[in-house]
Each structure stands twice: as structure tokens, then as C-alpha cells.
Image (cartoon, rainbow, N blue to C red; front, side, top):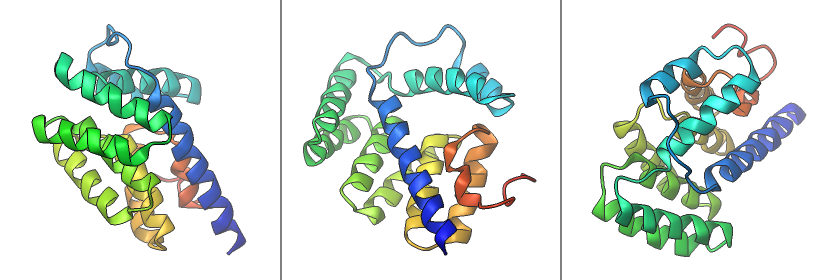
Length: 184
């Protein structure tokens, strides 16, 4: 049971570290195309390569459909950085209402719901993300962390295994436990 606490701390820390990456303002979209980035990440050979590719993918995800959407997303991210999670949710509600097909709006709101402890709302938003981008490794790994925290280890492991298909070096791999993730 002690190893589970260690795994949860590692997964929670990884999720929060992931939030730090997501919180960075979106820079110019990488020269490589999105599909090429996703393909390259799925076969990355080491953590350093995966980190570069996933950062470029996050830049893509955090680039909203247009300037108006970007303004709302940026306001939500600023509120998150200020620990105003409820304010961020309000901004993301506006974004999702205006741009329901923008997967990252749903993902960012799922993250905010996670941070305020509303796991059911977070999981519902994760499902919306995955309808729009089934390879969203951030949403999949977040789903794994939530399910793990809810004591649903087999379901958490399924979500993490799916995320690892797209990003083989996720820290949430720890949820798989000793040796459980070696034969993916």
C-alpha cells in the first residue's frame, strides 16, 4: 500500500509539472506539422526528445482558433497562474461556448476542475477532449491520475497505457507500478 502512496505523489507531481508546461504562453506554432509531431512523439527514443516534441505539441494545442479565442484562453491561463481557478473556469466556459470544437478549451477546463477537486466534471470534460482529439496524451494521463485518486487502479492503468501510445515518456507511467508498464 505504501507504493501506491508513492505512485500517487509521483503522478500528482507530474500532473502539476505538466500544468507548468501548459501555463506557458503559446509561442509561434512549430515549423513541423502537427501530425508529424504526434507521429514523432509516439516513437521518441528518449525523454529529451519527447520533451521537445511534447512542448511543440502543447504550443499547437494552446494556439486557439482565432485572436478572440486566444484572448479568452490567455485570460484563463493568467487566472490559473494567479490560482484563481474558479475565474479560469468562468473564462473557459466562455471559450467552450463560443468554440465547442476546440479540444484544448475542454482540456484546460478539465484541468481547472481537477484543481478544485471536482473530479466528475473533470472526467466529463476529458471525454469531450477525447471526442475531438483521441491522442491528447495530457487528457489521457490526467484521466489516469483522477481514476487512480478515486481508487480505480485498473481503469487508471488503461488510461495511462493509452496515453503512453502517444507519449512514451509520461511521468504518469508510475501508475502502472513495478514492471507493469514494461510490455506495452
